[in-house]
Length: 384
Image (cartoon, rainbow, N blue to C red; front, side, top):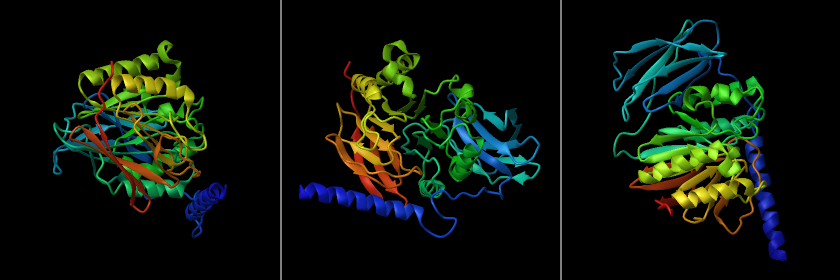
């Protein structure tokens, strides 16, 4: 009994210390501090979304009237540069680049009447045989100082794209919160494409999530989709996956997984609600049933979720590893390990993943740039 009480006290003291660490500090540096970047010629953006193979969409909001122009080239810092005026989509301006080659660097900048952005570089896919490195994080919400620190730490890594597990904002119906989100993420998303998934806080009848992530341009208006990067298939799912066989999303996921298995690809699924979690919300049982069935049948290596504000990695369950990564700005919470837990931690962080030699190397990294968990995830064969 004494041991149990001591363990509880230790966890509470650790949580209290972590809470103080990330909410206290000089004036203006607390967890909710945020100031707009008035030096930029853009209000938000540019940020990059991947379309069909060889297609990228560059989105932005402007500070003053006028049509921005994107100057861009493939594979050379010296040009020549093509010029493409953006198309207005509500309060957004969007430029769509097509026929972009895999592996090559795309270099671009945005030019407005007020000035131009720096040049940025990104890729839309890996070249044949290349290693892939990307990052995952989630639950940014209103902890703007922590969110900014996560972005700054992540941006020191050489990553091809980033996965967000949802709850980007606290209230998806407020445009001002999306403005804050994209301004904080600007240093990263200007040169790293984002693959988003929707969280419960992002939802709103106003459709801001769908609008700002241009789902009608590249995801057929759906909040679930699949993207390939080299030998890796990444599948984003919405919470509606629990409707199983009677739902279009389940059929989509099954087909995407079947195709990936036939091509002998590694697979990562990401979504907001965790199938397995030892955090405050716990395992989402409605999601757990269909996700585990799909993962076991088609050989899914890794499933990444958010929602609980902590880090957790499970032991392989029927071969599949499950990650919770939901500590990038939302209030951190205690985590109490369960039978399936391999490692758990309450600390703001992101997850760095590298695909090499048909396996996934995982590192969980805190705001000091320290790695606090590592794992090697080998290929999981399908069991059809």
